[in-house]
Amino acid sequence: MHQTVSEEDGGTTPDGGTIPDAGMAPDAGMATAEYAMATLAACGFAGLLIAVLRSDEVRGMLLGIVQRALSLG
Image 1 (cartoon, rainbow, N blue to C red):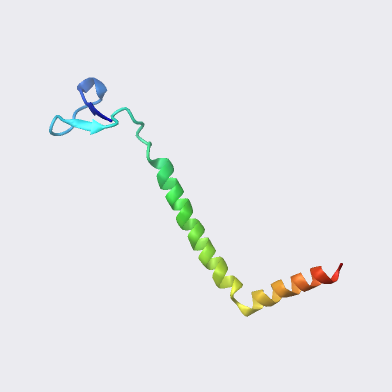
Image 2 (image 1 turned 60 degrees about the vertical axis):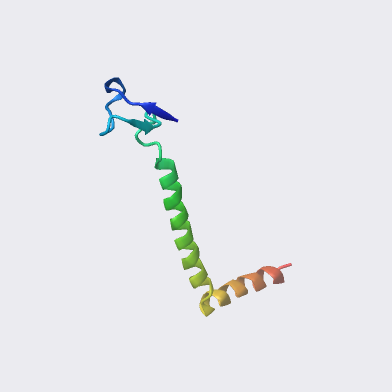
């Protein structure tokens, strides 16, 4: 929704025109940016986890844990 901006609303655009959603808070888009950063961090962590789990040492440890857990029963 476009509104005409006046001095009472906090100023005008350089051409004296309208701006979208003039009543929005200054940090209105922050949640989207935070989700984007969290998504990037999660993708980086997933990549690191895949690299670690593909190593032979980690694979052997996990296999040993599963074998011990199954042999207890």
